[in-house]
Structure formats: structure tokens, C-alpha cells
Length: 297
Image (spheres, rainbow, N blue to C red):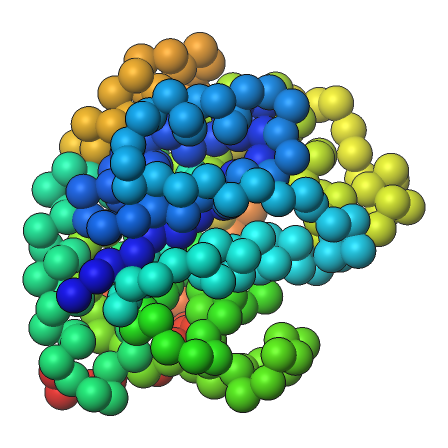
């Protein structure tokens, strides 16, 4: 069985993406890794080439401004990578997602077992969403607990919305909702480092990426130079595990301090109640799921 990986990145150095740790963490899982590199101006492509691994194949792309609104450009870049893989299974990782060094063999075992079951179309993975620094995680209804990251490479599977996950489509019209994939859970966490940057860089990144969901007028009105406030959040928890070894250098370069202040929580009352129920009974009521979990397996 051949497993193909794919990811995409543009100006990753400028915006502080851990794309090199991300790529290195996926290489032990896959037989080939397609990296779609957007028209970068900061040495991102050169940094990927410097990894010097024969599994990596770079696909150069130019980000089309027509796909700006609603994050469609991200799905378009993801699909470009998907179109260039050749494996029986596909594994997608985003530029701020990293796998632990203990993950590859477990992932391969999950894929081998899932491949034997005809009704299974993919696998979902749990997430650690780091926020503010490398010691806090956000695990509330505002984050996804699981998402599709591995799936059988069959016709019709495409990136969903802003590349959140994947669904199956009968036509090329991805404005349709598509069909959710039938999946099993894989007990291998994805380490998500989207909100672990210096507050000034975090604000710069946020201001820039707003333009891929909103028009110029909205961006102009809502763009500010004020550093990102990591305490404007619903609720954080302490992370007590270990980070992937690939993140050692990145974590060592941390140049900001963050002190979590739970009294500044912006969690609304109804979500406080739902969060309490989830923690008390282990079930997230009314949870949005971008997949169909196959029960009884």
C-alpha cells in the first residue's frame, strides 16, 4: 500500500508557520510528499528544498485573487496537492500542524486496518489546539475536536470549504455541501500551532489572512496595528504532555511572554453551561462534525 502526503504553504517564514517541522513530521508516515508552494518572496521554497528528502516533490503555484473570499484559495491549493498524489491513501497536514515522533507507526497501523473495511473512507484525528504559548491549549466548542486528515484516494474526494477537511463530491461544483466521509477514529493527536506566535506577528498574520475571507472594505475597517491579545479567549487548559521533537528549535526561539488570565474569559453563559456538561459527562452536545463516524468499530 502506498501512502501519499500533501500540504501547501506560502510565505511561511514571514508569518511564522512551523512548516518545516510539519513537513519533517509527516515524512516518516508517507511514501511521497507533495508540497504546493505558493508564490513566496521570503525563502519558503528554498527552506523546503534544503530538507533534501527524495520523498518531497514541490508543485509551484500562484495564488489566484479570484479565490480570495470565503477562504476558497486554501481549498484550491489543497486540491492542487491532492491532484498530484499517487498513493492508495492520502494524508493531509496543514502548515501549522505537526505530528509527534511516536505517531508514524500508529498512523500506518490505523490506515492498514481501515483499508480492509470497505465502508470506511477515511480517518479522523484528535487535536491539541495550542493558544498563547506552548503550555496552553484551547479545548472548547470554538475548536474542532476531530478532523479528517487521512482518506482513501478515490475519485470525488475534495477539500471542503477553506480546507477544513474533506468530503466527496459527485460533480466539480464544490459550492455544494458534498457528502461527508465515513470514518473511524485514530488515537493519534495532531499538534496545532496556529496561535503560538509573538503577539505582534500574530496580529500581522491575522490582519493579512482576513483578506482571504473578506472584501477590501471589511479588511480596511477591521485592520489594526494593536498586538494580538491572547487573553481574549473563552477558556484555556494547561498542556501537560510533550511536544514533537521537530518543534524543539521553534519552541526554543519563543520571544514573548504570556500569562493566562481566566478572569478575562469571553465565554458566553450558554457555552459555559455546555462546556460544564461536556467536562462532567464527556459528551459535547450539538457538536458540528464534518464527517460520519462509523459506530460499533
